Image (cartoon, rainbow, N blue to C red; front, side, top):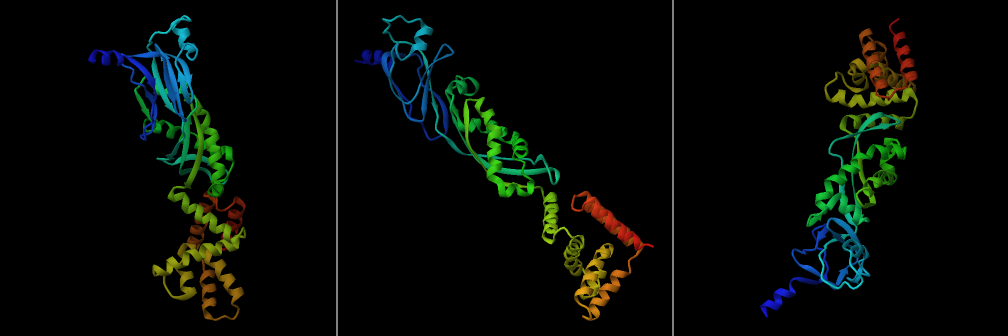
Length: 346
C-alpha cells in the first residue's frame, strides 16, 4: 500500500490554484520531481491565467475553465517536445498561475516636490498624491519582464517600481492637461486622466494595464502658497491698482497695531506702517473721499501719509519691485506707481 501511495505521488492529475489574500500576482505550481499525468485536468478560475513553460520557453496559455491536458490542448508544448500523435505518457513542465484581477487602491505620492512649468507662475514645485488600480493583461510579458522563475511574486514587491512610473510622468500630465496651477484643484479629474494617459504605455511594457488613476490632492510649498494667497487677494479686489494698494495696506494695519506701531486709531496705524507709508496714502485719500467732514481721525491719516521721507519712498519702490518680481504686479503697473512715488521726491 505504501509503495502504491509513493507511485501515485509521482504523477499530478489535477493542477489548480486558490488565490490567497496576500496580494500574490504570480505563483509557480510546486511540480518538484513529479510529472504531470497525460490527460490530467487543469482548473483555471475566473481572474486567473495559467502558463506552461518548457525548459525556459513559454508554451501554452490557458484562460478560465477546466482543461484536459492532451496534445490537442497543448499544441505548443507538443511541438517543443516533439510528441507524436500517440503520445500518452506523463511529462514534465513548469506551470505558472497569474492573477488578472484588478489590484485596487494602490497609493502614489510625491516624496519631494516635483518641478513643473506653469503659465501663470512659471516654474513651480508641487506635491500631489492619489491612488491607482492595475491588472495583468499579458502574462507572457509579465513573466519575461517581472516575475521570471520565482515561486511567488507579490503586489508589494512591484509597488515601488509602479509608483516611480506614476511620479515620473506628473510633469507630462500637467503639460498635456494645459491647466494653470490655480485651476488644478478644480480639475483634478482631468489631471488624473492626463496622468493615466501619460503613464499607461509604461505599464503596458510590463504586461500590465493601468485601469484607473485618481488625484486626491495637489499643493504648493509654503513659500509659494503665500504668494498664491496674495494673488488670490489681488483677484478679489480686481485689477484696479489703487484698490490693490488699499488691500495691501489693510492687510498690514492689524499687524502693525498689534506690534505697537504707535498711536491709536486710523492715524496711528497709518504712521506705524513705516516704509509702507506710501501705500497708506492711497487709503488716506479714499478715506478723505468717503468721510468728508468725518472728523479729525481722517485728517490726521491724510496728514501722516502726505509727509513722506525720501528713504521711505525708496523703500516703498523696492517693495513694489519685489511684488513685480513675484508676478503680482505687471511691468506697466510698477512703472506707473514708481513714477508717482518719484514725483514726491521733487
